[in-house]
Image 1: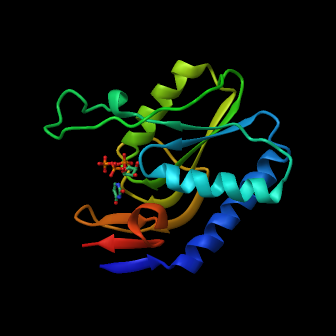
Image 2: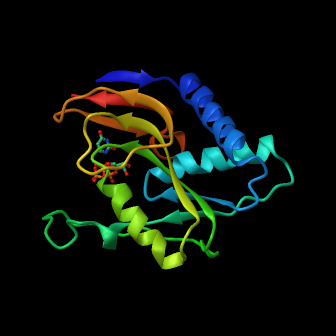
Length: 176
Ligand SMILES: O=P(O)(O)OC[C@H]1O[C@H](OP(=O)(O)OP(=O)(O)O)[C@H](O)[C@@H]1O
Ligand SMILES: O=c1cc[nH]c(=O)[nH]1
């Protein structure tokens, strides 16, 4: 197991990602944040909190999206997929959506996310923010707009993002 990100590095990177969002979205007047269940939500919580600190008084609509029923292997995978909660209490019609997940690998989770989002309206645009981009691993033409760290890896490896809230510490590790 190799450590890719310490807690301090993670914190600095999340701050950078929040600033990059601010640079592109300025007053966030038509922008909404959507965290991908289950593990992208830990990142989106942090980004949302950081933006609140950077632009106090501005309320950014924030939701969580579960893609279980939109997976392309939902009917074929032998694994049991347990759905988490989707909580989007606003319309996405004409909004600038920032979709947030911890790891981008094949792109299939985000493909499902794009499908699931449409139940909530037709966004003006959708951007993708990820903490880890495992490059050269894509099975679909999906690329991130904001990246914490790009990682070279082989299929046998797995990148795991650990979160204090769930895993008792903040760290990103590569499992061989
Ligand atoms: O780009 P992809 O190949 O879809 O992988 C990315 C997804 O994998 C992880 O989730 P999880 O471990 O729940 O998904 P998995 O079981 O499909 O790896 C991670 O939190 C991302 O959502
Ligand atoms: O490395 C990977 C691949 C898919 N999902 C993860 O969380 N990590």
